[in-house]
Amino acid sequence: MSRISCEICKDLIPLVQDGVASRQSCDAVYEHIEQCHECAQLFHASNTNEEVDETRILKKTRKLINSVLTVMLFVFIVTGVFLTDGMNVMMNTVIMPVTGTISYIVFRRSAFWRTPVIIAVFTALYHLLSVLQQNGGYGDIGGVVIFALLYSLFALCGIVIAALLHYAFRKEHL
Image (tube, rainbow, N blue to C red; front, side):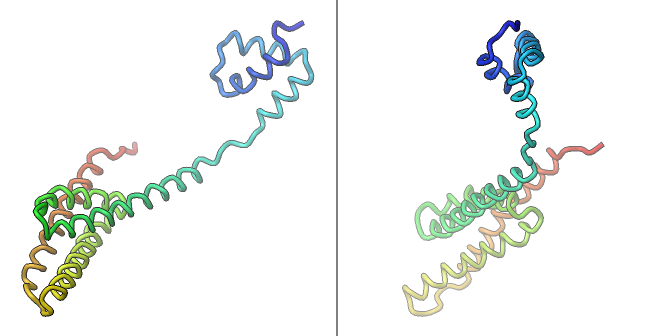
C-alpha cells in the first residue's frame, strides 16, 4: 500500500511534472502510481500535454507592446507640440528626447528618419493652422521651421541615446 492517498497524489502530480515538488513528494507520487492504475493514467495523460508555443506568445506580446508604445509616441508628440504656445515650452527638452527613445524602440533604425519627419510635419501643420486661425495670413513661417527643426533635433538626441544603449547592452553571440 502506498504512503499517500489518491487525492493527495492527484494534487501532487502537477507539481511533480513541473519539477517543483520536493524529493520526498516525487518519491511518494512515483510509488503511488506504480500501485494505482487510475493515478498512473492521470499522471501519463497530463504529462503528454503540448508545450505552450512560446514564440507565438512572444510575438503577440511584442505586438501589444509596440501598439502601446506607438500610442505613447503619438501622445508625446502631440503634447510636446501643444506645449509650444504656453509657458511650458521648455518641457520639450525632456518630452522630445523621450519621444525619440520610444520611437527607436518602435521603429529601430528607421526611427532616425521617421520620427524627425513626423515631428517636423506635425509641428509645421499645428503652427500653420494656429497662425491661419489667428491672423488669416501666413505669419511667421521662420518660427515654425525653427520649432520643427528644434523638436526634431531633440528627438534625434533621444534616438541616438537609445541606439547607443541598445548597442552597449546587446547580447554577444559567441
